[in-house]
Each structure stands twice: as C-alpha cells, then as structure tokens.
Length: 141
Image (cartoon, rainbow, N blue to C red; front, side, top):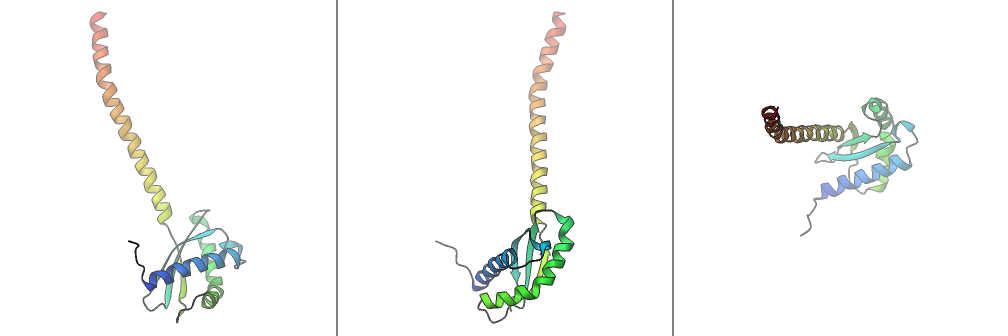
C-alpha cells in the first residue's frame, strides 16, 4: 500500500523542486551554481522554510554561497509565489547540510574498522599456523 503524504510534505517537496529549478536556471549569481538542495523544513503556518543545501566544492565556499542565496532569496520567494498556489509563501532561510560529509566520514571510519578487523582475524588465523611451523623447524634443526 503506498505511503500517504500529508499536504505539508507535498508542499515541502514542491518547494524543494521549484527552488532547485529556479536556482539552476534563473539565478545568475555564480556563487550558487554548483549546489544541491537536500531538504526543506517548513513551519506549520508556512511562514518560514529552512532550505538545506550541499555543494561539490566542500565547506570552504559555504560563506560565499550563503551570501549569494541570501541575496537571491527575495527573487526566489517571489517566483515561488508565482509557481506554487499556497496562501503564504515562506520566508527562506538557507543552511549548509553537513549530513552528506558526516555520512561520508562515518562510512570511511566503518571501512577502516572493517579492514582492521579483517587484518586482526587474518593475523590470528595465520599466527597460530606460524607458531606450529616455527616449533617444527626448531626441533628438526
């Protein structure tokens, strides 16, 4: 059975899609060219929306990107009003989404631990065999 979405979830998804398209096609500021919108959270009264983004260049460029997004926020809000039929168009608040970087960092840590475990298991398995071989070699010599 398909999952039912509430109206606010549909509005949030539509805002994310429309903003992504507007930023990609309409915003001429080069500071915001290579971002991906990852999530939108909206208040129950639709007055405010937190728009989360990530970028391809890492956290170093975030202050410039935020400046560009804040500068374009009036234009983006006005265009959202033309594209989405809701009573209140939310004020847009942009936030850098660190979850992608955190996920990558955690994945890397997990990979390191797995490699260490595999190496330890290999050493333990190989260490028992080598000890027996060394004892045999000494008694022959």
